[in-house]
Image (cartoon, rainbow, N blue to C red; front, side, top):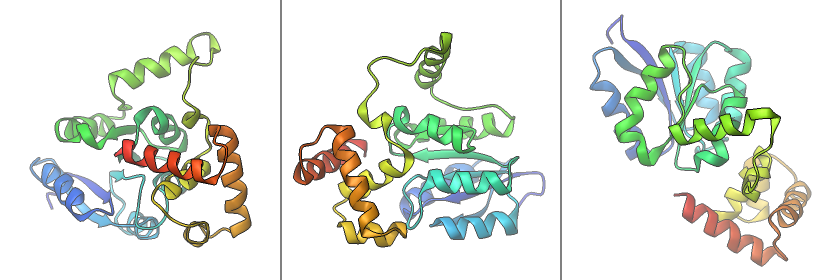
Length: 218
C-alpha cells in the first residue's frame, strides 16, 4: 500500500458489492483498501488494529446494524471519518447516520458515479449528502420548524427500523430476538409499537407492509 495513500476500511457483507467498491477505490493512486469486514464485531477489531483514515459502512450487515456500528466506532474513535453506503432510502437513514457519528451518506444506486467524490469530500473534513438531502435538512432546520408530511417510516427509532427490516426479510419473532440478542417478549413489544406507528391493523398487515418496504428499498 502506498504510504501516502489514505487508508479505507470496507464494512460490507455482500462480496460482489464489496469487490465493486474495492475496485473503484483501488483505481485511485491516493486511496487504498487496508481491510474488509462482513460484520460489526470484525469491523471493530479492524478499526482498533488498522487505524484507517476512513470507514465505509453498510447498514445491513452479516451480524449487527450499520448505524449502531457507526455509533460504537464514533464513541471510541470520535475523529475517525465514516461514510454510510446503503441501499436504503437516504430520507430515512441519512440524518440517523450523521447523528450516530458518520460524516456522509451515499445510496448504493448512485455509488458508481459518486463514491470517489464522496470519499474525497469526507477526507477533506466536509460532510457528504446528496443535494436533495442537504436541501431537505436545511429546510427542516429553518426557524426550528419540523418538516410537514414526513413519512411514518421516518418517525421510527433506529431499533424499530431494524426490527421492521428483519420482519420484511421474512424472519420470525424468535429469529429476530436471537439476532438482536433480545427477548421474544421485547420483539413482540416492538411489533406492537410498529403496528401503531405504521397504522397496521394486525401482524399479517405489518408483515406485508414490512416486506413491501424492504422490496422497495432495494
